Length: 319
Image 1: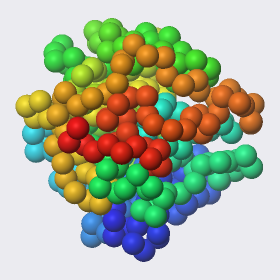
Image 2: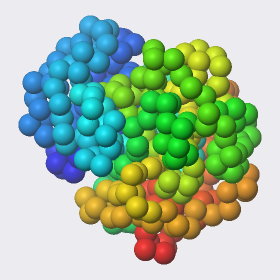
Image 3: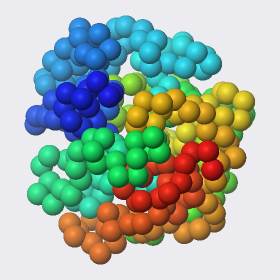
């Protein structure tokens, strides 16, 4: 990622990679990982993805063509058992905001954003190391996320929580405690299992390829959403809250924006989970509740501060 940033002067983005920009619907789904493939000596797979996306064809065929061990944590059996599976998600910050609406894209407080090219009101921007005002050594770039298929019965961190009203929708958001207490018992059909975390590293329209610094690592389910029984039942890619998780004992490994690898304790300060988050923007192109008006220190303690690029928090991951 830093080799890419050194050439492009920015990181990749959560969605709408400029390299793949076109009228193709599939081009909007290309994940943060794909543009870095040439920097991992994977030019052939990159070219396949480029060709498929530009022709409005799913790029999943390319992701299933080769086993990329770089993307898999050796401690995660599900990650190792499928070619397209992956363990490492990008940091979108300390808010939930991922749609295409003018005020409702990926969090403007994190290093990876959802840059929607057709939006005249687009206030998102590309982020490079120069934009990380809190310091690259204090801002999380990537984190481990357990690959899930909805079939785990324990532990909770490997499951997916449902029925959290308004999570991912407009207006006021539920407190993180709602995710911590979400119902993780839904058992998906075989066809639904690929909609869970970590099943297609190239496609960000399926299960999320990002995580948020809201719920502390391993403190709750892999993610949660309010859509328990709608499209794809459950629709796990409906703007869920995605959490950092790992199979390691009481720690989750992260990569900081200066490329340092750190182990984050499960007990890191993540603020008060019963606290009401800042309101999400409405779909009107210029709401006063725009998430980008959320400034200052993170509501979610040290962990939340690790996800922001310019909130001027004097906090380190060791606190």
